[in-house]
Image 1: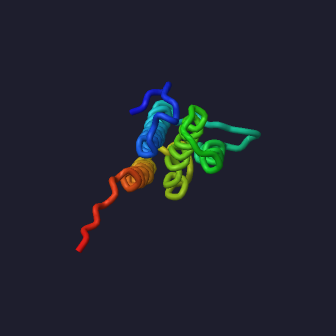
Image 2: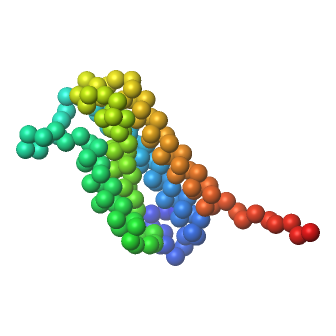
Image 3: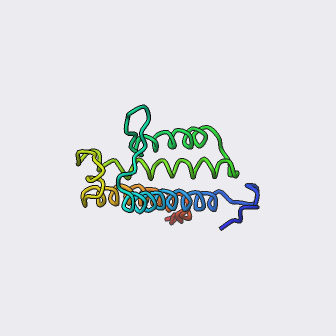
Length: 149
């Protein structure tokens, strides 16, 4: 894995894809684990604004926008792009964690701790991570040798 001090000119496109993919998968998974651990230890922690309970799904959407827009517009491998990728991954982790929970339960703090919420989160986070891994593998696989005949 390239060091943090390496410049983008010393990285090949394949190593950049692998590094970015690992960073994204790690960030999504770590966000899910950290959120679940914190909210398991303190299940009645709420983020309220003007009397409205703001689920981390909605905060995650803001992170997805903040990180995703620069990733969609700019190209390259810089610390700023790495930061955008981490912000994007955190947002995905936050959003995917609550997606099944808000669909399949009544959205209460107690429901967040239900198995359907946990396993739903595991499922959608896993699908996102596997999707990223498949894309990495497809992009970094060596070209096929065509037989002439």
